[in-house]
Amino acid sequence: MEAPPVTMMPVTGGTINMMEYLLQGSVLDHSLESLIHRLRGLCDNMEPETFVDHELVFLLKGQQASPFVLRARRSLDRAGAPWHLRYLGQPEMGDKNRHALVRNCVDIATSENLTDFLMEMGFRMDHEFVARGHLFRKGIMKIVVYKIFRILVPGNTDNTEALSLSYLVELSVVAPAGQDMVSDDMRNFAEQLKPLVHLEKIDPKRLM
Figure 1 (cartoon, one colour):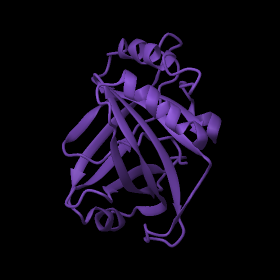
Figure 2 (cartoon, helix red, strand yellow):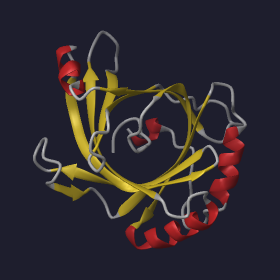
Figure 3 (spheres, rainbow, N blue to C red):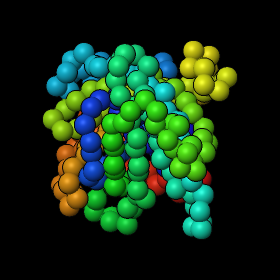
């Protein structure tokens, strides 16, 4: 969908500047209802929150080999919700004992002129998409099941088509650096979702 993969958290208020712990997988469309049913039984909220988000990925090319990436996101189904600017750091894959991918995560609520500001700063939009999905919560864990839609006419979020016949599934926790024990809880929860979905610690470099 984009590099590196990004969790699609519904747009809410507040600022986050911590580490994101992440496991990812996917299910085919025909398995969606079975997975939703399983999550209803395991999670704190039996009825999931739904979201429809529009995300734009901006690049700034400089002296470094790879461009600097920022993500601008807005809710399409919550009138008045702020835009969000998101930065995701490089994943830390080295620790074999850590059961989840870990990366720095900065998420800031902004005004609605965010995209104009980024363009003025020299960023260019690389691609955009719409994500529609469901959000479950289990303690501090968030489980998101969503589908990515390609925007056929730039800027027109009403004119889209699904990118695949599957839904992405992401289990994530945002916590202060060094809280690696949360990855154990994530692994234990992911085990309860098998064989419906296999959530893994995915190295984005393998997707390039």
